[in-house]
Length: 279
Ligand code: ADP
Image (cartoon, rainbow, N blue to C red; front, side):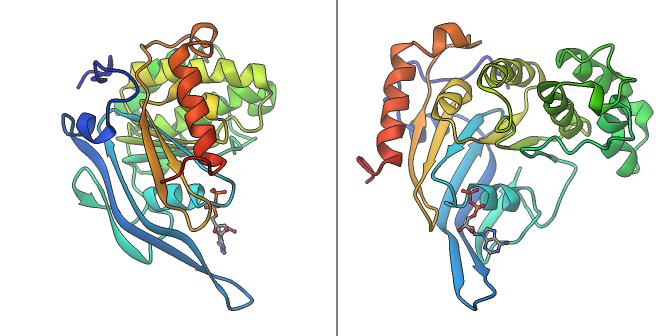
């Protein structure tokens, strides 16, 4: 499918359901419940009846107050934890553990300091027992797309925080996953670098044609990057609204942040998070 986007012709008011009907679901999550036991014996209901459908090639941003279950949902999607109820599927198959079809990036780049950039990026392929030869050309192309060409033989400490996060994203893409999950990947970067990274991530996404689910605390980041912004309630996490972002791509920070649709959507999301307009 094309990533130059099957976005709705109408404005932000176009319903997510209407749009979804025209595309193929890559992820289907239905009736997800997650309960954590605690040392005091009290159970924490982290997610309650979460239903989420993500279409093939779509960029979905998850926003919600701290502690509402965003990371929990991402870990479940990554197969790193199990739900207490509900069903997850990826491309029609149940998600029952980590898979090379899913790449994950966390807030910290977590690169291995004694490995070069090339060794870090290619690690999942080598660990997965696949021959590097088959993926080498594609990984070199990813490195070029990420603007990291020439840095292959450097070590992580020689790179800036933003570059290290780009390496982490490339590492997550190394096995050619269907799905890329990003948990607040730019949270530790300064505001300007973060803005640049948003534009970089959009470029990488447009070139790599992956399905992306991104958690962010930044409403502006969510509207800038997302085809759709999914808003969660305070704990227990539930999905309270899904908003389609109809801004044209590629989006440029200078134009997009002042665009009336960006401003209107960001205001609507802020209202939902402040509890002013939740259904
Ligand atoms: P978010 O990513 O939205 O900040 P989390 O998914 O990290 O939220 O956490 C959701 C809720 O579940 C929080 O109240 C958190 O304290 C609780 N929680 C998360 N992980 C655990 C755990 N391993 N054990 C107990 N409680 C947890």
